[in-house]
Structures are given as C-alpha cells and as structure tokens.
Length: 329
Image (cartoon, rainbow, N blue to C red):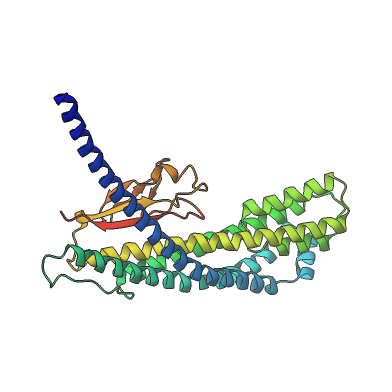
C-alpha cells in the first residue's frame, strides 16, 4: 500500500509538471501565431503596392509595342520578331524596377516591428535599468546593401522570366499550322508579357489542346486571352507575396543584427524558431521545419532538400515566419 501511495504521489507531481510544461508550450505557440498574424497583416498592405507596380509595368510594356508591329515582325521572321519583343522586355524591366520601393518599405516596417519586439524582450530580462530597447535604423548601410541586392535579384528574375516567355511563344508561333492568323498570334504574344516561361508553355499547351478539339480560331482567341489574364493575376500575386515576405524576413533579421551591433544582445543569445501557418495547407517542404530552432542572427536554415535560407522562407508563396527570442540564462 505504501509503495502504491508513493507511486501515486510521484505520478501526480509528474503530471502537474507535465501540465505546466504543456501550458507554457501552448502559450508560446499561441504567442508565435499571434505574432505571425501581425506579420501577415503587414505583408498584405505592401502586397497591394507590388501588384499595382506589376500591372502598371505590364501595361507600359504592352504600350511600347503594337499588335501591328508584332504582326509585321512575325512576317519578317524569328529574328525580327524576337528583336521586336525585346523592346517590350526592356520597358517591362525598367518599370518593374519600381518594386524596390515597397520592398524597402516592407523591410523598414518589419524592422521597426521587430525592434519593438526586441525592446520588450530586453525589458523582460534586464538586470539594470540602463538596458533598454532599440530604434531601427532604416538608413543603416547593411539595410541599404541588402535592399539593393534583393531588389536587383528580384527585378532580374522577373524580367528574365518575361524574356523567356516571349521567346518561347515567338518560336512556337513559327511551328504552328493551326489556320490562325498572324494577327491572332500577335495578340497572343502581347498577352504573355509579364508571364514566365512555364506559364507561356501553359498557354501554348492550351492552344494545342483547343486546336485538337476542333475549336474555332475566334473561340481559341477568346479562351487564350482569358487564360493569359488569369495567369497574369496569379503571377502578380505570386511575386507580391513572395517578395514581400522575403523583404519582411530581411527587415526582421536586420533589426536583430543592429541590436547585436549595439551590444544589447549577443549572437549566441538569439534563438530563432521556424513557425509554419500550422494549418491543413502547410506543404511537405515546410512541415518538417516547424518548431526547428537555430542560434544566432547570422545563422542559416537548412531545408529538408539541403537548400539554405537566411530566414524562414522556403518557397514562393511561403507563409512561414520566425519566432525570435533571447535566451540569456
């Protein structure tokens, strides 16, 4: 009996400790998800600006050339058509460069957001009143360097995607024997400005499918135009979400690096936890990363496939964020 009671008392203590531990974990997860919602809200505001710039860039590029011009170039051959399409690519690339502004705004807003979080954490562990918070320096040389590199990479990627899309469609148009007019092909080429090569291939695949089904040329034109517009909407939202979340990740990382630079926290005290959206839409790439922890503002994440990331972002349209905390004791 005595042993049974003793076992019972020990079991109760263990259970109580387990309950307290689970309560702490539950609250921590709830806090991380609440923070994630704030970050997604911040992202949504900047995404609208990205989409507006993308749509404006497409229209400017389309205005740079004409249906008649494309038609005339197609009649002269592949070289002439490709050169004519390059005019649209150059105009698109010059205009899409405007995304650097919302990228900077996203970095600054997220940097300020994270600076507030850091200040709160510092206040919670401060042993002296002198230890306080930070103000995010939006003109820090490192912030501006990261912005220039990120913006240049994004602009190049988006522009090259459109160049490849136009090249694919122009080359494909010379292999067609569909009975469609050169004017119809010219309109199709105009419609893919802003898309990437994969999407352009989807357009040509749909075209081939409709021809095989015996759809009339006029109906093909309408379906292709509608499909291209839908793909453009998807492309603009994809770019907006991806580049915004990457900029936000950069801004948060810079805030911690500034705190470390000012001696407010040591790199070895910074713990970063990968947080997924924790819903049924979490993908197989991000799911294994949820709850993973690395130490240090400069540390990098390793994805299941071996790829490296500077912050919690695994792929296009990724919704993951980081729960960053100070582990000083």
